[in-house]
Length: 392
Length: 82
Ligand code: FES
Image 1: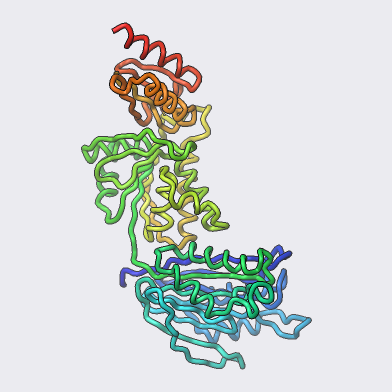
Image 2: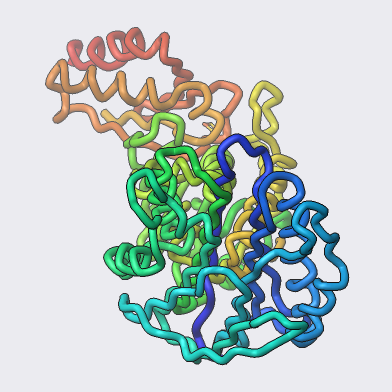
């Protein structure tokens, strides 16, 4: 195994007036190997409910079958045999793009009728070597490349290349335009999700905020693994403090300490001073503190609760990005470290019931802390991070 | 003199920020930066009485409402008497 991993982001715009999106994206790991991922973008014929069902089925079936290690030929014939035939058009299909990352070493790209996947390597467009195969009379394009750090794969549905047709542009936002546009900012170090948002916002703008078609952008960015460690809460048995801390601090990568009591334990363990700062860059969030040798020290529940809010938004609309991407409060700093920098996150969760939080007047208690951590872990997994939770 | 204000979770919810900001303003307004040191601490284990604070070794229970009074009485008052 190498030290690469994939950062995956995607989002869709619905065609104006439609409640459902006719494009679907499905991301799964191969059943027997979590370093192999399958990303499927499917675009259902037409729009609305029917398109949504077609594309969801297509994406799910392909992802599931490939995760189990089946061939693309089998997947395609299964889909052809399963999908309902459209009564209007007499055909049953949804187009698809598959990006299959194998062991984080190679990418196999299989596409049927979608705009071709764009690969930017070191910020420059590179042509993918492509072969054509025929399955059930359909022409399917297949490419394989070995992965390099900073490779960016961009898959879009045809809504993206039609953006602006007849409105701001004569022929829409063609693939070449997308390439040119992406080359200008893909090297800045944005995450896949942010790259997705930038591209999709541009499409929306070209459509004059009234998308004429379902539009989806999916970005896969190959990056180096970046481990990160976060400890929250004192251990259930006070005798486990130094065991918990020595495990935590012995781990490679940055270290984040959350919680007042927890930071006192960490400071004791390191024999360093704990210095709370008295600044409130965000009035809602308690100040951060400093301990020599720790990358970030924050308050616990209130801060993590905010991080969770940011995480949910990041997975959905990504509207809070402007706030947490540069603010100095504890929650924004944790968000940057976990969402942008980290790829593998180890959580050390102490299960002690904190006497400080048993005041019934306050909206925080022990069970909330455990739930927050669980939900945050779930969100981070959806961002494609590898998460490990250890309880003490 | 050293004032330490708790900025732990409970006290934060009860208004640590307003207390700290008021104290900062009062200290500068009266030019007492040399005489009074303001610092923070995490939970002092007295959450029910928050916002917890200590002035040298004395324990206080502050709130955004009583901060000014606390400052006048226990800081300016004491400093003036010296
Ligand atoms: S949080 Fe201030 S005393 Fe507990």
